[in-house]
Length: 156
Image 1 (spheres, rainbow, N blue to C red):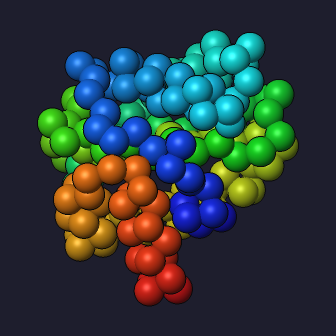
Image 2: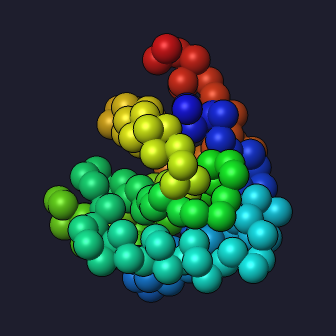
């Protein structure tokens, strides 16, 4: 699945401010609950799955991007929250830089293949320097969603 198929304005945190990746993950999961994408009673299970995945290996990749993700039982649909953190979040990224674009991806465990394909689509989009620069220049959630949709159409 493409990122544009997964996000809506209510699933974009702009701006996000977090002191570390643990706080950022908690805020991303809370945003999914607040947007109605995740039932409140699933908050802890999803949060714990994301934290466990992060402890096994950082999801902070290069170029100021982090993609915290996990496969979880008890959800039926993919849940995605995109955040723009202008000041950056220390995510122990592979290149040592703080993450300013975060995409939290929660996939139903029974759709594991979708997990891999979706991660690849998100990485393909965010691997482009101009897309990252444009995302960081956005002012609000609406601009983020419009930009992602436009850029994915251009790349396809």
